[in-house]
Image (cartoon, rainbow, N blue to C red; front, top):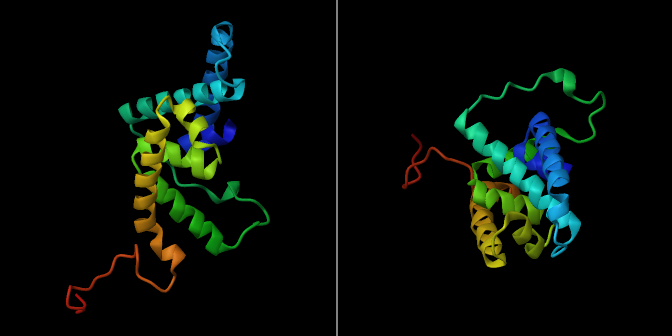
Length: 167
């Protein structure tokens, strides 16, 4: 649940607050749980709703994130610079997706939930999850094509005209 909140909100403090809100909501609604789904699915749905509420509130009061300071970096980096850059590029590409496409992709492709579980968590039909994932993946493929084919120019803006002349 923490991972879903963190990937949805992309801010540890916001994710922690959303998770706290979600567990308070779950505690208050526990008597109303009808056991029509697994408890974990029910809890994830509450977490997703709490995250979406925070996203809506944040959009009403947009803020500019502060640049990350170096003091939070690990003393010994675990990964190479290229892997870090790739993660940043992928995260930026996910950030460009509309919320209704990003959420299913994060839950299905990043977190590994099934389409059925994702549909339950988001309160939408399975077919809607599939179509939103497909549309989001198509957009990601265009933006991230250069990662799959490093020699190609897919997803990399160029400064050439149609006739191959530079500007």
